[in-house]
Length: 121
Image (cartoon, rainbow, N blue to C red; front, side, top):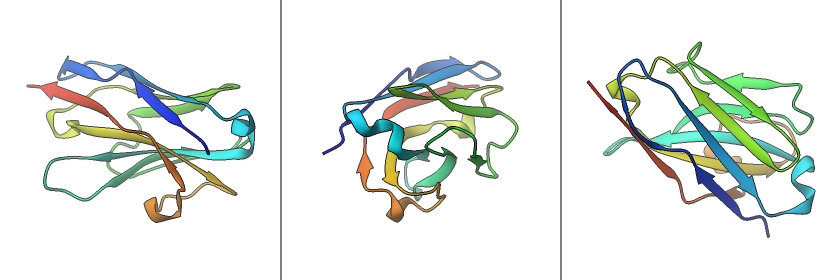
């Protein structure tokens, strides 16, 4: 069982930056593709970014493309958010799956509890 714990969310002014982290409990973290999704109130969960097991393949969703960067090290995956806008306000979730990266939430097996990002205007 893989346990994921997000951190780094908070309140930030428009134009600001945040770095989200997701720590994994599983020793086989290096064998998992990782993704970040977000969900705003009343909206569906939306793909933000994904990174392959070896870190060489990165994918980004259209809504925040150019404003975020995903990366990983031995036990943590990161999401750097830049030039934040009020419409980026959402709960951001970390997810993991065996196999290749995916932008589809149902294909991810493991999920964290989420971290709230609030962007004020």
